[in-house]
Amino acid sequence: MGERYNIHSQLEHLQSKYIGTGHADTTKFEWLVNQHRDSLSSFIAHHDMLNFFAVAENESKARIRFNLIERMLSPCGPPPEKSEE
Figure (cartoon, rainbow, N blue to C red):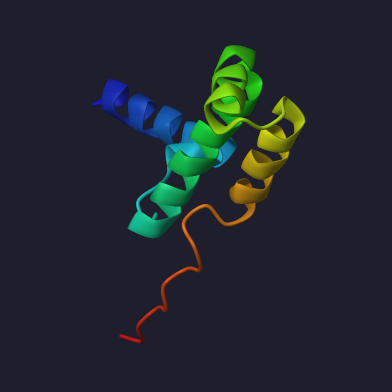
């Protein structure tokens, strides 16, 4: 029983430390936003991916980086309206 509590407390610690791990009250929209932002930041950090996008879109690397950073602001559009229950 003690091991189970320890694992649960470790999970709570990770969820409080890292936003992307989610928690029990994470909505589908929040989870998707985290996934999209993680992907976009990975594309920016991996220069080979950035080069690939630049060649594929016939744009400069700086313009591609700027567009990806702009998309990180609202990657999934506006949040859905919360229903009052």
